[in-house]
Amino acid sequence: MSESHAEVDPRAQLELERLRGSIDNIDAAIVHMLAERFKCTQQVGRLKAEYRLPPADPAREREQIERLRDLASAARLDPAFAEKFLNFIIAEVIRHHEQIAAED
Image (cartoon, rainbow, N blue to C red; front, side):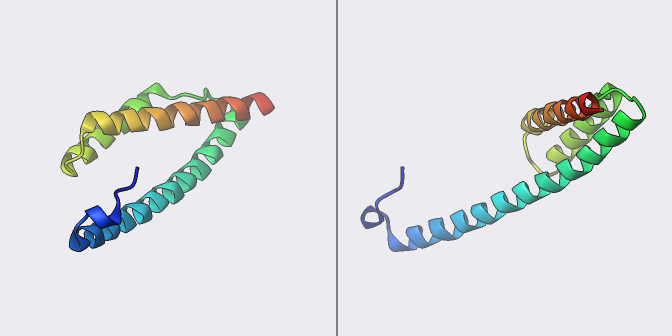
């Protein structure tokens, strides 16, 4: 629900709009970065299917989770949140790899 502009100090409203504009730009960048990431993982999926490799790579996944947790800590982001986010992405990537393998 949006705040009424009449109830918010104009300076605060301007700052809210500036910050929300930044958030919108960051969200757009995240979407574009995820799209690029999934383009790469689709190529990995095709390669795995071609060489009959399993869709999941638990050792690689553990390494990536640990790496992302470290990056999150350095960036002052909750590592548990970063891990949940990466786990969600990994699950989607594995699903895509399974679909690609099933097509062959």
